[in-house]
Length: 519
Image (cartoon, rainbow, N blue to C red; front, side, top):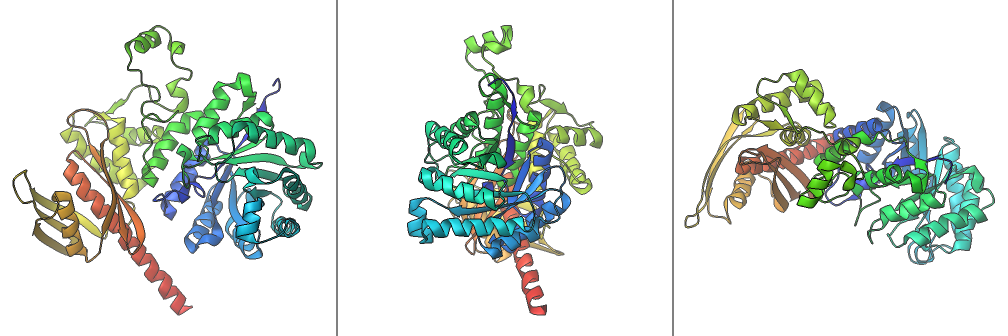
């Protein structure tokens, strides 16, 4: 390719990415991610599926109302109710988009929709036309396009464009395609659909076979102008095309693809860390671009080569994706302004109250640790992000006795409003299991632990421990997060953090019920 094409980056972290099990976000967290995506300079933010729930609708509407700098998109099926709801959610956006979809593959037509080809085309056209009556930026997706017959796919695409769709997205909904097939599909549509010049071709690839990025790049090479992706590749099942990977592949191999994006690549690592912190989905160490080991060189021959000439073993510069050159940043005499500045470099925007609370925790940590690393600061900020709910319950103190030959014993003191409550129990399957039992006694909640992880925030014997926990209560999953140089204390903080999320959800439900009754 001789002429450089600009590829639009359509981020669906807040919609498809949130469908990862356990990755649901509240409104405040979605706003944090939306701001990070705007700072990253994505072109389109798919903020949610407004018809799915009142919470989804509220989040899309708030993002559309508050955020500026990207197109804000709401997803809708090809039904009047869905499309009307999507428009209500995005209508205050600076650049609103409605994304309508309808399945087209034979297996979906027969078993899910029970519709003929003619009915599918008619429904698609009706949906696009209704969306166009609200705004002129309409995207249409023939769901499961990768498994749709070519002749029929061409007919649906042509009809959707005639109805007013300006973007046609080709989804590999179940991650079934391979790169050669995806490239051939894009080429086929460009060659056979007579009005294709009136629309941008997009691609949305899932990662069930580990080919989402490869398939997306193949589509770009064949002529696609938009890639739909998520931060860290999160999403349902095996996830989606990873934004950071496809962006850096296009940048690093511009000689092959001849394409550019508007992404500020220096925001990739900070945005990755933010999304990981908010969703609780940890990035694997060897993950491309943003993993902890992505630019680590342990083999002696590699280290020697990099020291002599970086390009011997590095095809990208760490600083180009947002990795700081110097990890050692702050000490006990550092001020609030220095802390806020470093937080911004790490990808976090802290409000006044958030900064105050993080600064307090930072000062406490600085008294315990001589050297404060980026990982330590990130852990403190993550704790604040996870603890952003009103703290109905607070950990006031604890005593734990355990040993290889003894019976575990745990005493916890929690503060609830003005009441200080203490409970002591013996037995259980270790101190953490016993701590769950004590918290259940004190709060009156039934808690089932579904996931529990402890990891080091940095390195060294005095490193902070990060504890993340996933609790099931009344059929719903709630995450908790805790940080401390004492891993037991971090675990207890994580349990209490999850309990506060349960309490916040109960308050929200009570408000909704009260509003419905008054209405």
